[in-house]
Image (spheres, rainbow, N blue to C red):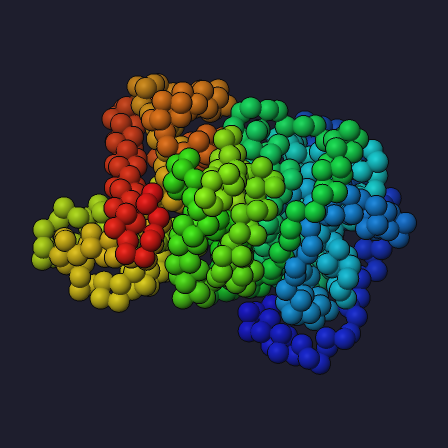
Length: 631
């Protein structure tokens, strides 16, 4: 289905909004589990593939067939009324009582229309165990058919597994290595679902985010779906980006402890479920569900398309569309303000002074700020701060002349999680600020100033490419031009003069680079320093290396060599190692040590630039005529 057809269907919404959509285009999707397994295995294509695989793997035909049947029996999900009722009325409240759900109803109505003639694949962000329960509740309250949910078999314990498998959950092994029979059955089951026309739901990040921002996508299942479409599809397939954002999360405390290496992940089971249900019984705010711009996978992957996409490009585009509809929340802006002042407490007017220009900036860029409109006044910000204080993220001292707020000791990773849900909106602005400082030494009138500036911006973009989902280079350049004009309408005239580069930053209503980039760059510095300390030796055990990064990082935080305690993050260290692997810095080769040193030196230069932005921010705030924050 082409994008223009999607738009046409949306225009026809008023004609169809009240109509119910069918459960599927093929009644075979309502068959029992045994019948589905037999139907898939009875396909001549599957039988031929199993025969070929048996020869390659050295298996007998009967063993290959037996393994295929066992694999399918563990994968195939059904939807039985008794169990969907248990899912909706027992399991769902245990997971979702902590929030009031705020959903984009207009987009939900559009999806009802599109589902009549298309297979929808919902691709939500993954922040909480509650995500699929929240989305299922919304879909059940609409005219959409129930999704088949692709998930991990870590929730396959009794009775959870028994209920969810009969409610449409497809539980896939967390790791299946080189089990080619299992991989084949996943592909064939997805092909069956594509042929049957049932809607799917899959969490592409592969696990709950530990940092609050999108994790790099897992391409495997999306690739299998693309392959399935090439052999079995009666409907066009539409990808539905879904942003699920929470004011707060109870479970973030456990994730933060795991991420910092202070605790092991709790094993899912009955005791875990009981504890989770108790935790979720306390209301802590709103869960926001927003649907991004739709994408036709059929069109994107069609070989005759003008620009056929790879699965990787499709996944990144989906995540960019998710980011575009992810709302800016009150806790995100409050923690963004407080994390930058390094353990200092701020008054309510001081926090308001920091947050107000961010709101102005967000509205100028038409960012989704509808959920934080109340932050325009003291009472709105005070409500956001009070909720964070009740959750032990902030301390509020009221024994003096007026209340003051600061990040509670040991809660920096929690605060960073909430901040990170919105920082993708400010990354380009941060890169612009660093670039201006990096080029401050270039003489006035130097014709190479623009080339140097673009080189600096692209270099930093490349370092951050495993953290954030940047547009392609030409589009990124356009976005940076827009950021420059927001900073100063005369940017491209003023940037020719060195003193004006600094002056534009000094006169800006806010500075952002040190607030959003410092934790990432300091985490990368830890990795780069330890890599360089290995000389030209191979880093073969990445888990051991990350454990070493955590240990050294703790020392450096205590010594104040690292400003940001939230830099101690296994997820950030893993992404830094992805960058190192991308630059061929892990395995022994000629010139390896020199290249490691070069990366280390570059990262230190970025940290120094961020510190300079911070110093400039301190200076401008101290000299503010409006009673601004003396950070």
